[in-house]
Length: 548
Image (cartoon, rainbow, N blue to C red; front, top):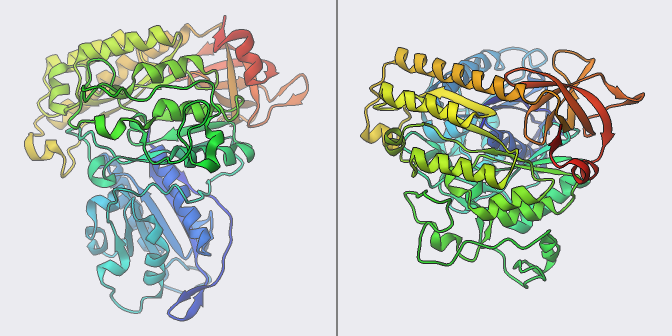
């Protein structure tokens, strides 16, 4: 997933809490680092806090408690958080409450899970530590820390227990910006892939999926509140497999709880994973994994089922998903993306490397050839699809020839978007236990620069071909650089800057669909002129995803 830094905004609602028999009015500020999953996790924490009577504030100077939701996937991300914690320590209450009220600083998320009590011991930078599976315990932890008059034992300030079942499916998430037309919905948590470079299985635990009925219910509520685009989230989102449903089978073949029979109102029934003897039968051709998915996925609602069900709620609402693994793109899912108008034609297919030898050391479960075959297959089934990817430069043992194969893969595929980083070893991973981080730092950075340059050259050429094309754009808000422009994304996920703020004298608002004609293009952005206001249904019935 792409990295972002976001400060969280919500309602300022406070009420009394029972803290050592005395009511305490706590106001909490949340700051989020990392991926979209972290953004959604902050929404979950916000919902938990609000249900316990805590107030939520957007200004840290008015907060009693500051919670930092963290990322641990790369060392650079952690270093930024250490620096931020030092800043917050300097802001903590040391004088009159009227001028400085911050008393408790908490660390949530992956960094909390990875470092645990180290955060409590590190120069008083954190008073509370809570891992991704323990957010229900946040109210207790912050109440303990706020009311403490002396040193507390770790279990009174820290909970980093991982869970094999927690999905927060019953928590009503409170979005940072409830007026935004965009929303994230977590559908599964954890990861079983055990890629050699990745710490996620150790910070977020094993894969487990939310009930399909629970996901659909949340999406319905968001749509009723005005959301126009939903992104389904998971560490390995397309490995979703829900076997929790019990009850009657509806007329489309979905086994659902009786109260959720309407979940089955989808365009068509998508077949579940084949009940064959092949443990990887549900995977894309040529892909395997370190674990066998057969039993867990057999007779379960698949990700294709889930995408179909969410998309069927309202055809005016777009559906995206991230972050997937290339192995989990079976034909069923690809056909859903191709045939469902409001499922965006934009797939993230993280390669990580273009070298089969490097991929083997990374334990990715595929070769360069299998990956390229998948890309070809995807483009055959979904014409006009845009493809994004992730790349790591300088992984353990990477040679110049292997790096050159990554450069050639970039040129062969010509990605629309890419997230590119140089390798940083993480504790507990397979690489940390079995491989040497033997590529010098300056070589890593040089190779990364070459990867970025190659991507930008190819993306600029790809975007040049967009000039003259007309896209359907969902307006998200004003452009960052000019209030005389609006900003949104095409169905294919490209950022589009729309000239002007009205069409035929009618103001363009966030949540509006606009047909736009591309007039110029850069590496990452299209500049376009508004042609007409429209609906998603009207646009797709006339033109499909785009037209010249």
